[in-house]
Image (cartoon, rainbow, N blue to C red; front, side, top):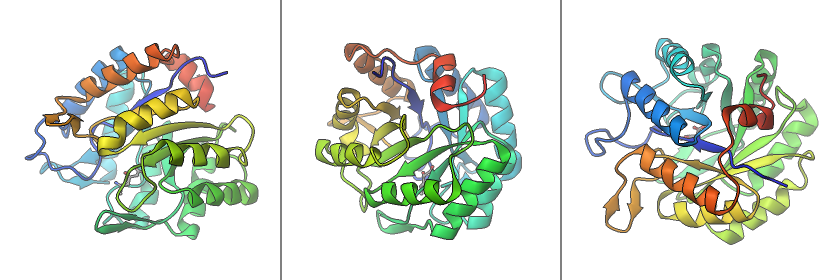
Length: 277
Ligand code: KMH
């Protein structure tokens, strides 16, 4: 029985433009302040994309290292770096993200159309990312944009073994134009497919854009965990732009409490994800 809810905040992403979304945290100070406030509300994990001095997405290793260090020093959050980056990032740069030695990193399980772009994740690249994470003790979060990517994950684990820490955790990223829709039916289909993965596999769900609330409700009633944040959602309700990441985390926390699955503490989250204390 799932008694708590793991809440991940994804505060920035690589897609939104700061000049259009002023509340987006893009500097290190903004990010640490956001992280601290989201942790106080009940978030346990932060999924991080960093920006450069022009607020453009970057995988600059110096910035990634400084970000991991600052988040560790300033918060008790589990720090997960995105290896997805932006659709324009090279495989070499995406692999090098692991050199910043985060607690966790994302590993997307296949190629997907991504709006007008393509988010490319070749099999050989996925294998390289997975095995490097195993070697370095970086815990994986497998990002799933479409149902078939769960079959790819089953194949990956069968051939190359469990991730660092031994626990399998996936994040269903739903509602990306080109990927699976953010619907109850799609979530249930994924939940069925999760049964083919190792016993104890857990999942979070993220509903992009207007699918945010239905996906949260479906995930909570289906034993899943939640990822929220301005990386995925910029509209709080029809005609009401999101004011801050804290507003989205607060809503996730109140829904989790309503579902009688309060937010996991940092210690509970570490245990759930197979991270060393
Ligand atoms: N920005 C997307 C192209 C991840 O963080 O690993 C990829 C993404 C997934 O956001």
